[in-house]
Length: 261
Image (cartoon, rainbow, N blue to C red; front, side, top):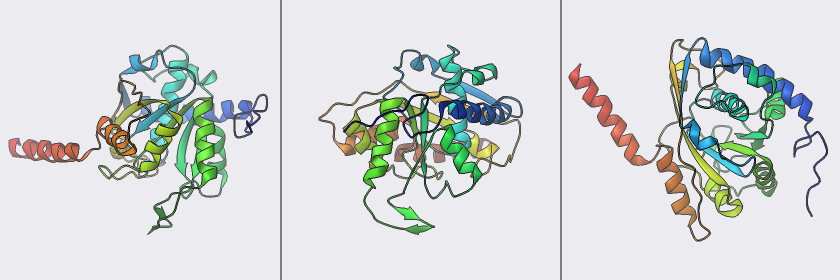
């Protein structure tokens, strides 16, 4: 049975007007952090010009709980207003892209006013299948969580972090590849850098100012029905530069820089 979408509400029943207000409020904070106390450099904005308004999945590496997604939503509001490769104007927040969502761990989105506001902004909370309360678990994905992700993708742009952790170079979770195989969205790889240096792990506290925040959008991917889950995940991890070879390259670069100094 097809889910009925209420007028002036998103697929999860949140009022669109309230979502606009929350995106504007949090967007101003993101704008200040990304463009005033730090500088954001965006690459690959041309890849976003011809994307459809829905059925698009952005897959990204992860450096903070909240600022990664906040910066992307700020950029998407610029894209909606035909501004590419920049995020330094605040007026697009008055007419933001409202059909944008980001997947977050339910454990991270603990009870309180902030998670409720972030839910209005577009967070889709799901239960981790591999970890809970700091302990390893092994459980199947909740069908209700999968339904929520499907609803979000079919309604707009969705941001997800396949590693499910801010720790770099760890293996991606197969759930992302399963969703790609089942829903067949356009997949846009994203590589971010600098957020770990500028903010704390949650992305709430400022650690360092004057940091260059880099966000690169890569050429969209469209997978085939016969592609295996393993191959889909491997391709995604390679494109977001979190495959094992990038870890080895990073170590080599740091070592080479140290020797020169």
